[in-house]
Amino acid sequence: MLRRGWGNAVSVLVNLPLVFAAMVWRACLRKTTFIAITGSLGKTTAKECLAAILAGIAPTTKTQGTANGRYGLPRTILCVRPRHRYAVVEAGTDGPGNMIRSSLTLRPDAVVVLNVARTHTQSYRDLDQTAREKSRLMRFLDRKGFAVLNAGDERVRRMTPPRGQRVFCFGNAPDSDVRAEDVRAQWPGRLEFTAVCGGERCRVRTQLVGAHWLDSALAAIATARALGVSLDMCAEGLAGASPYTGRLSPWPTNNGATILRDDFNGSVDSFERAVQVLRDARATRKILVVSDCSDFRAKPRKRMHYYADVGREAAAMVVFIGERCDQGVERAVRQGMAPECAHGFCGMRDAAEFLKGELREGDLVLLRGQTYQHLGRICHLLEGSIACERTHCDRTIVCDDCSELKFRRTSANAAPPVA
Image 1 (tube, rainbow, N blue to C red):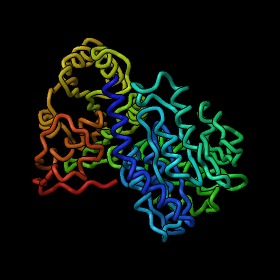
Image 2 (image 1 turned 90 degrees about the vertical axis):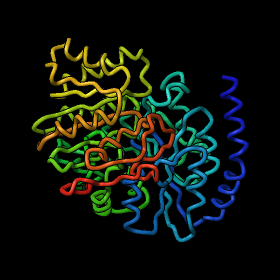
Image 3 (image 1 turned 120 degrees about the horizontal axis):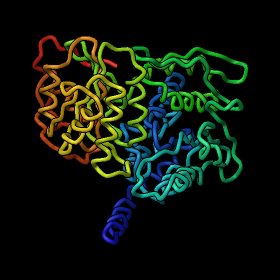
Image 4 (image 1 turned 90 degrees about the horizontal axis):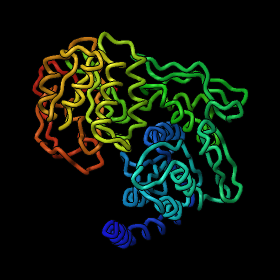
């Protein structure tokens, strides 16, 4: 613990020049509206949705990828230019104290808080402490600014700006400023709903997979409406926002199967949301490919048993990846799954080779792993070859953007992935 504390202190000191430069540059950008988005789940998607809406009315920039931490946030600020009317900035935290630093550096004109869930549980005692940390992003909210809060999350609903700034709510509560009706999201359909804002209604059709992205979409609409954007413009912008790679993004294969890549967020809460999408989907055959989840306070064997139980109920076949894959297979078979429907592989390449011969037209595969495992490479292996052999990688980027992947497509009939 002491070593970790010293490491954090050194990191902060090394980062000070970057933060100072960002603060100075932020003070110069008086005509740019800075919007900060935080939440345990869905903030990257909310950022992409809001940026897509605002880009339709004025020059807009945003956080690139998921660079939302102590290094990424100041770099995002330094990339903003005076011509940008809006800057949509994703703000994350992996421990207490980060949010107030982000708020001081960013001095946002608007703050969006999506939800509080089980992420970074090694740093927070409980969800109440996580909520307090998230709320600190509003500490240096501009006096004329506003907050956009999720009325459907009780911990978020209780948050208040420090100086009584305006608050706009979204969610399923009747008194929300923006809410949704007639929500549909069953695969192969995408998320669509009727947005209700005051006396206005508008049908919104997105490219997002799963009803759980509704809060991200509503947060984007509520923020845009607070900035004076019409509901029709909001719907038009959301229609053009693609799923972020690795966050339930579809990857069609050349044999007619579709893989839902969910390999870029390892928390158990997001796993449960993704499995619900698989459970509700319409498909010829459903397959769950899973390694492990983070923020899951259970012993490894218990975790594998949980994945087996969930997979047996939601899918026709389960493929376990990792050193403890045999425990998952054993549990699934013992609970009633046919032996030919439960498979385990220690390595990613072996799993990819099996899937290459197994997948067929109409299959829907949920690919789920922790971020550091980068299981998205399985999709590339199904269509060609890659150079990267890492079993553990701390890079917080999708493999598609990594120079070490060196993907070469070898299947002549393979089509490039589309959202």
